[in-house]
Amino acid sequence: MKRLLALLILLSLCTLSACGGGTVSAASDSGAASLESGTDVAVKSQPPETPVTYAVETTVYGDSTYADDGTKLAEYHYELPTLKAYREDNSEITEANGPSEEKALAKTAAFDAQFDVWAKAEGFADTAAAAQEDYAWQMQNQGEWFGYDEELTYSAYQTKHLVSIAAVYYSYTGGAHPNHTELGWIFDLDTASFISPASLASDGQNFQEAVTAEIIRQAKIVAQSNQMDPAEYFLENYESVVADWPSYAVSFNEDGMTVSFSPYEMACYAAGSQMFTIGYDFLLPYLSDEGLTLLGLAPETAAKQ
Image (cartoon, rainbow, N blue to C red; front, top):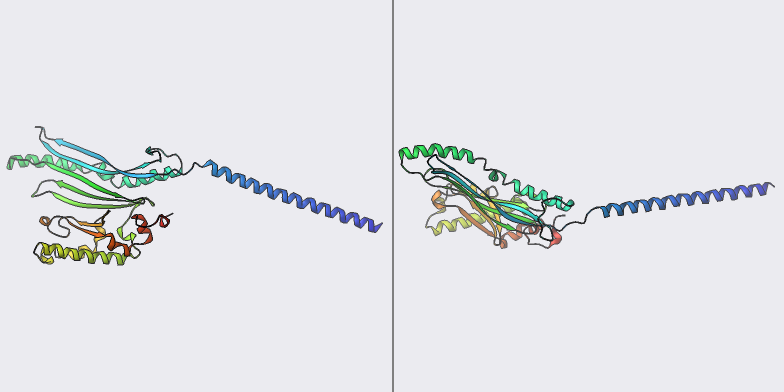
C-alpha cells in the first residue's frame, strides 16, 4: 500500500512538472511571437526611405532707394545660393513625408541660414541713409553723383556629399574705388554643417603647413611675373597671412581647391585679389578617407553613416 501511494505521488509530481514546463514553453513562444509581431508592425509602420538629391539654385534679392528728385541713391543686387531637396520623381521637398525628408529639409535650412544676413539685407537701410547724406554733400561740393552699389555673385561646386560656394561681394559706398571681398563656404551634406578645409585632411596641421608652402611658392612666381620681388609685390606680412589660409576664402571646383585673398589682405588694392589653385594631385596624399568621400574622390563605401 505504501509503495502504491508513493508511486501515485511520483506520477502526480511528474504530471505537474510536465504541465508546468509546457505552460512556460507556451508563454515563451507566445512572448517571442508577440515581440516579433510588434517588431514587424513597427518596421512596416515607418515609410520607406526616400531617395533625396540636392541642387544649388539661385535666389535673387535686390532693392533701390531714390532722392526726392528721382536720382538713384543706392541699390543692392544679391544672387544667393539656395539649397533645394528633390525626390526621386524630381518633385521638390517642401513638406516632409517621413524621416528622410525631415533630414533633407533640416539640411536645406542649415545651408540657407548661412546666407540670411544677405537675404534680409539688414545693412542696406544704413547704406541708404548714408547715401542720402552723401548725395546732398556731393551735389553741393562736387556737382556729380555716382551712387552707392552692392552686389554679391557666386559659383557652386557640388558632389554627392559636399557643396562648395565661391562668392565675390562688390560694394561702392564712396571713395576712390569700389571694394571687392572674396568669400568661400564648404558645406558637408552628411552632417548638415559648414566645415573647415583642414577637416578634410588626415592630419590638419600637416595639411595646413603643406598648402601654406605651396601658396608661397606660387606667390613667388606671381611676383616674378610682375618683375618684382615677393617682399615688394606683396604686403610685408604676407607669409603670416598665407599661413592662416583656412581663415580666408576657400572653395573647391573641378580643378581642386582655390584659396583667395581679397585686396589689402595679401597685396595692395592695385594688385587685385590673389587666388591660388591647389590641384587634386597635390591634395590627394593629405586627404582622409572621409575627405576623399566628401570631395567625390573615393568609393561610396567610405561615406559617413
